[in-house]
Length: 443
Image (cartoon, rainbow, N blue to C red; front, side, top):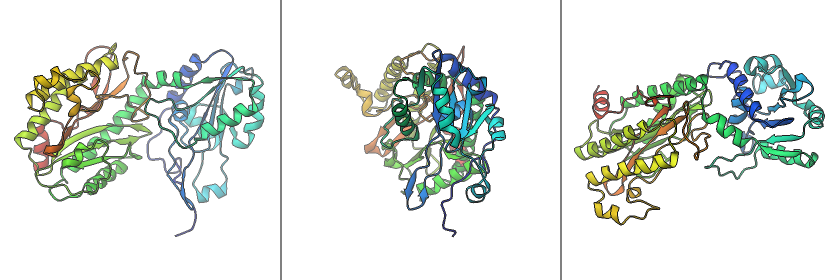
């Protein structure tokens, strides 16, 4: 093996097909329209994170700069300055300059021409020009939007490229007013453009192919990691960048561990296999959960629990309409789940009567949320205190977990909220009814 760091170049071997640059132009217009007068905004690519020695993790682009530019390359910076006196400086890309040496060792990087073709941004500088150009435009702006991670699930311990850049910027230009880009992005990114929904649909379609492949593969004594391998084979074969998140392949009791990711146990006869898996396509996520019988047939008890979860899922999905408040939605889902758990003999009416309102009785068997925003991130941006709107994409994923029966059932599809009527199920073609799953496994 040649002794050098190998970084997979996105533009030399990009798997996904190019997205029309008009998407990124629209996204920048929306962001710029939300900015205060005479302000600018700056966005950085992610770092390439080291592991040890000369090894690194594969590069994954920061979703915000991708959303606004389509640039999928490390060491890139986007500047938006709608009111800049110089027209050519109202949108600027700074890129790592490519050369023959980089092309041989790492693969081709973006040229200025290809950056324009991808993003629609005409002004492209090499990174070595950043300080000179930045000084000029900082003297012309009053305030700067900086990008920090304010997602409600965020737990950031590693200093990001954005964080380092912000520290340096504020130290050099302390007299400027600094504003937050996140409130704007949380709102904008939660409502998808048609091109975005198309990419999510493509990710869901690839996930469908993986699931159908696995239906013909699973049998008693197969290992969980072998099933994981079948998924990744089908995903990569269909232009996916891989898993949208770390997959959960959990047989038997493992399905009762919500974030089980070891995937290293044997699938035993008579068990139910829970698979929480989604393909990534063009940086857009899919998020599917299906449960199948390892032996090809569900027992009557497994069917009862499965169908209870399916009824809750179908009921929950119908409530994904404009105007729905996320917190109220979960309360209603909890009431439906409570009825199902009573019918299954897992709860009694007495349990419900004496429940703690802050931790309802149903939480013993269904302890996580029902839905979350989905898009460029699996747990995507969205302001949960604001009403749902058309073209938001949500998962629906109720579950029932019974550790003493070594049985965990969760079912999950991805839905687009419509202006009128029920939401559109992006995973409608992925088998979910018991009869369909058993029939496909019997082939």
